[in-house]
Image 1 (cartoon, helix red, strand yellow):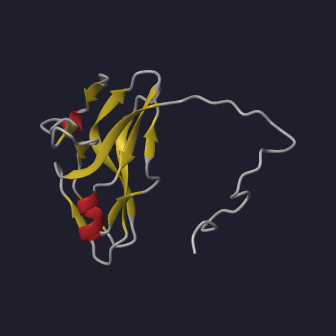
Image 2 (tube, rainbow, N blue to C red):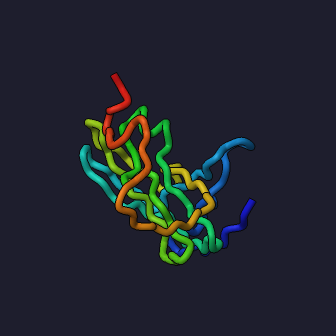
Length: 145
């Protein structure tokens, strides 16, 4: 388990901190720090009222809540979103309404999940050819029917 430092912003006063809903949950629920109506087809970066300092070697992924996605068509764009360890601004959740009706976001309502994850660094080595595989260059459904 890692510790993530959190700074509550003035408009986040009185809101719960990100927290696991159950002992075995992978994501910490995060709530909205503002109320708004998200029109069908619209998107908005919803304020959370806090900033975080993620330890070096980690990121925090932003993921949608399955209940909002299934029941209302509310999802996070750029999913999973990445909050980098060197970002110190307010955490905002990019929500999109893929449903057919406006959706009311209420301050204090759970809107997304945050999942801390270790980061593996990589370098690229340019090559003239790549090793062969059965799949080869087939992509976008090439392994399906």
